[in-house]
Image: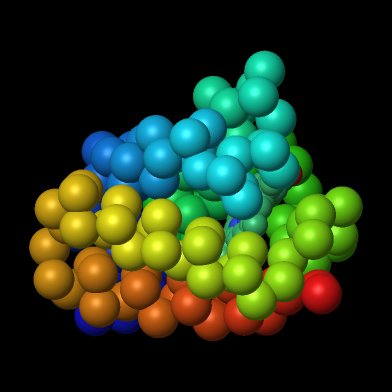
Length: 123
Ligand code: HEM
């Protein structure tokens, strides 16, 4: 499956379930919890969801609202060391399982998350 076909397969609902399952774990996480805006977790959830939807073949809502993602710059305020990277991926791997997405989508999404998380390391 090609990256741009993922949206056609799982739709907005698939991304919604995935990102919700990820953010449901964030507030209780000792490492990641403190990094995220406690009073705007719903906003953070929306940003990640819209980014992923646009990246995988859906409507470009994220870029319309936020412009070019510039993910390295936008993560610069946070200390993304080896432990933070691993923890983020642990939460996302769990979310991928919980969201019960079709194998074709998981096969594309899992390596994508691993690559970007490694690229974002800044400490
Ligand atoms: C490596 C571990 C990571 C950590 C600790 C981390 C942490 C954070 C935090 C604390 C925010 C701010 C929340 C907000 O207000 O939006 C954020 C934003 C964001 N993250 Fe990550 N992140 C990580 C990896 C990733 C990966 C792998 C992706 C993409 C696949 C990603 C995509 C985004 C996006 C799209 C935003 C919103 C940017 C914006 O428009 O402001 N992050 N991240």
